[in-house]
Image 1 (cartoon, rainbow, N blue to C red):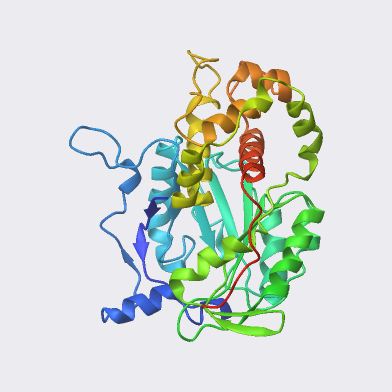
Image 2 (cartoon, helix red, strand yellow):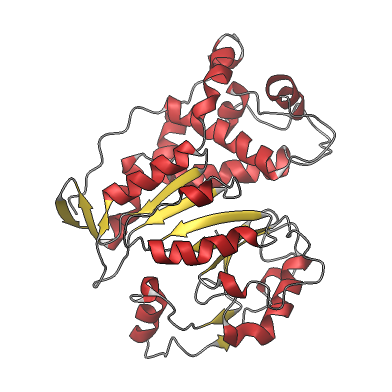
Length: 365
């Protein structure tokens, strides 16, 4: 996923900032990470190459301000221009992670209304105090798409009052990296997952962190294994609990039930990982299924060539006609964000069911 850092540098704000990766990295080069500067890539989303094509391709998710905070005080003079750049690229999705949700309203565009459709705001909360301080504010703001980031997770979290609002699309959890990383307990992760399942909210376990506790045992996990070990736990929740009847109906169709992942597909998934497959699925759906008008509708999805293609035919998400017949999503208009998320969840659930059961997670590194 592309990253856009219109400015660089930040000030530590709360316990989650203690071992900030930006400070660690800048210190290696003798830089002061607390010095906030506008970057040379400030206008990256609207920059074109020599052929006149945007460097950031249509439908990509752009992670914004990953080496700072979009709502940082020192950036108040630049933020309005950054919003203009975001507004100029409605074909891109911008993910903005912040600890400063209380400053959200400063320099907000006049046409913001209830939020831009292509902007996701992700509010962080590393412990219960920060959750209770930030999330009530988060829920009251005019934001169209909201996610919670509990990373680095420093203790157990009760998110139920906020998940019950129905305004949170997803929760991502993860431990802390670095030599001085604080402990992350697997029980905290599982408890948050249970809360997400209860309220039908997507859940993603991103990484274990360097110091991980599971079943009373402490594990030191190298940086290169922290995300892969989290994936091996197999606890991500895609809100597919209600898909049983759909898959039962699909199994009764001779055409739909004949599709399987090939050995080539399985190897591709193993080599690339499920995160990459999901990203590819999102791209396929945005370009080939989500538009209101599709000139070759009914013929836009190949039968083979990528694991997502047989998954689409098997789940009747291959064209708008099938989507209308099997999923009651009407033709003639663009898919809404919840509809796109639903289609992705169906596809990924079919792929998951095709894979062999995961082995129990290991944390020996």
